[in-house]
Image (cartoon, rainbow, N blue to C red; front, side):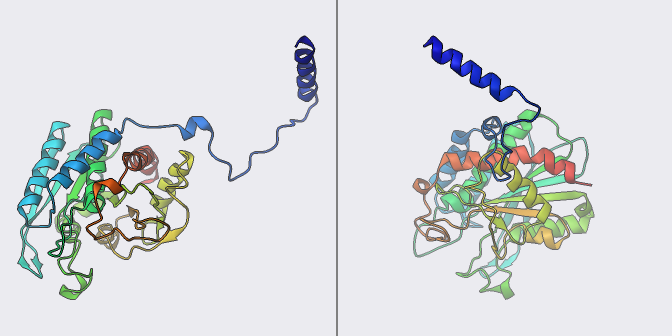
Length: 324
């Protein structure tokens, strides 16, 4: 045993002598060091998942329904319990079902600056008559995650920018297809209304970035870079995901979602990004559970909510630093 120890010491001394390091360079694509890979936040996965379950327990929640009223009350009560000021933006757009009263729920966390970063989710579900659609992932997962992000940010205290947590009503189309009715405008009612209101008031110039959460609770979480999103926001968020060791969940490949609640902001000149898993199924590019009766709680994982929550919360300081 002693001889083995002495031999080991001699080898160590021999390797440490000389002017040049014998340690090989780290490869550019090497995984992040363990300390960074294990970095986390106070985001509570079980709390977030509990919010998703509470929504699913209310059943289908299409715009204008009694169930969405109860969902709105649940969201509002949670936000108020964190100490956030909550407001409601009511509007009645024309839809294929006539005028429908909708309400965006907005909570505000004042910052050092009155300039705004919007974090958003939609909380309605697509209306179906053929089956019971509870939208565990599509509407539920992002709303539950955003509620928990709001709690964490409020507990952490004032930030550089003012944050608005926007819960959009009326994201889903009333018709079967996204563009089947109203000249392709039967969707994103809440986000379009918010941008119109910001433009009319002149406050649109104060909104410096918008981050959208949508469909990110899948057990097999896969969120590629969404092509229509603003490049620098994508780089910051996916770069943080890589540093935290979540390259599998946030792959560098790209895809195009087409349209979502981030697009009215982009069209309004506001940098925006869509964090969305549009591979809600068994394998890559398999979206079999989307808009079906199979979009249920058993397909989701608290771990997925935690990954997205941690990545986004830890990205915010870098996002703030990029804003001019």
